[in-house]
Amino acid sequence: MSIEVRVPTVLRKHTAGARLVQADGANVAAVIDSLEHQYPGLRDELLAEDGQVRQFVNIYVNDEDIRYLDRLQTRIADGDSLAILPAVAGG
Amino acid sequence: MAVETNAAQPNTLTFDQIRRYQRQIIMPEVGSIGQRKLLNAKVLLIGAGGLGSPAALYLAAAGVGTVGIVDFDVVDESNLHRQILHGQSDVGRTKVDSAADTLREINPDVQVIGFNEPISSENAFEIIGQFDIVVNGSDNFPTRYLVNDTCVLLKKPLVDGSIFRFEGQATVYVPGSGCYRCVFPSPPPPGAVPSCAEAGVLGVLPGIIGSIQAVETMKLILNQGESLQNRLLIFDSLPMEFREVRVRRDPNCPICGDEPTITELIDYEAFCGGPEASALS
Image 1 (tube, rainbow over the protein chains, first blue to last red):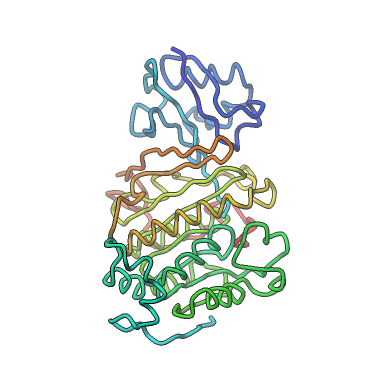
Image 2 (cartoon, each protein chain N blue to C red):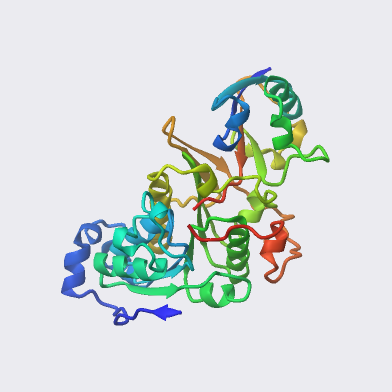
């Protein structure tokens, strides 16, 4: 399953500045593996040592926070979109 | 605390006010009743920096009767590319004084209340308790969690915004419908997310996000339209794209959930992992 992933400004250092990247996977965990394979270092930005999504980074599938879906097991279907959103504090 | 006083806002509009606000009074969504709501509203801006500047200017111009500003910083030349409340001759002045002068020039109808001090667990209840709505333009995580928690505990709506380089976020937290902790349960470790000073910011970006915060504040006062409540707006200026994601109240949220474990303000520097640059710019 190929999915389009939106990468926020803070994390574009891992994607050579790319805002939209393609990844594969049947669920969010697999998509993150796919991202890590293409862009080493990205997984550590998203997941904590316990393997769960960091508390200051949100992952949305079709604009819904995966915390309210199936977390990393949230299934991905054709045409879904995935967005990463970190907390930023600038004012 | 410096207090600038103007006459208390009466319940009828004066001829001067009708002349000044005619372009918005003429809209049925505002009208004279809405204009009086604006004149009677008390809005607090956390920070007179990038976001606070456009928000304060537009809210004051629209006739929001009382505008509070909390900021302990002084104007630096590096602020001027985005903090449009301040000008060259304000460099070195307190932001609160500079902001009050600018807002008075824009609209002498507005009472400006300046708090030239850091907002902290010691004074947050006293300061925020005096206002109806809080507009968040702070530049650091400890202040963001402090302001969120105070607004939840005092049941005040929080019009939130934040910026990073070319990208910004905005939403509205209304009591009972979720809060900043529901979206971001914990802050990043110190240094993990660079500040504007470290990473830079497009000068006009806070102009856009701060203006959106001003619109949302006016909508709350006027009770018009659909607020950004339960929606987080994400703006990326490079592709010129607005998107939104859903915001939900987390029943397990430690402060606004079903069984809150945070019932008073805490040590936010410690919560955020130690001292962090906390100038509100």
